[in-house]
Length: 279
Picture (cartoon, one colour):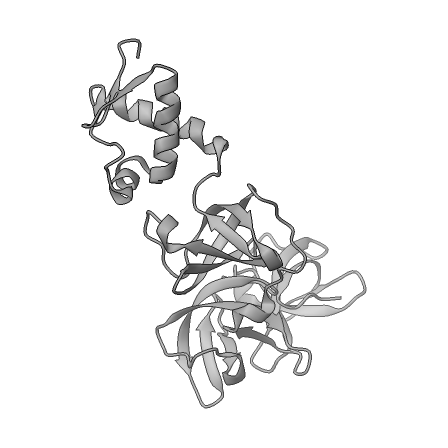
């Protein structure tokens, strides 16, 4: 069976004037067009290809790397809009189709949107959707508080940014906990801060709790040593200033300097923090 919209490991069966025909274990074949054939490809070789559909909706193979695969999310750019729908650049010769019914808002050429790619059961076509909510699953969580996760920033809300967690769940990063630039389509490491009622996920861009204190304390010590033993940062410093200079939130900064103070490694004054003689 060929897996449309996914990578397949297939065997080269025969060579024709239009390309090589590849087969899976049960004998179903797909064409790899001439432009993707290299000199080292030979009959009976097993190769890894991406299988999608040509303009006539027939399966076709490619050695190119798509920007999205079936049942996953990615940010893509709109190449064209016609009377049938929008077409997005997903890194292949044939653009990816987004029907009007799958557009949460009308798409315009040049815009970038987060989409989900799936195989439509009625038409047997690969199509993309910007109606992200219905493809996310929070009833059955695969994460726990404190876990490191991969997020894709999906949309802006009054509270912060909706994010896709591990290509599966919906989460939220609150505005008052963001101390760096964050934009739609960004991907980065993050952490499960809290699981609320109805399995709603609060996401932090920084490590949670005591796990974060030790590396942050080291960052502060390194900065102190690099700046001659003094940093003009303290309780009165803005969260933005602390993040710009140290890459951490004000809450984590205060935890870290509190630990360093108890260890006798720094002195805290109204002006800032100073390394003790021992350091």
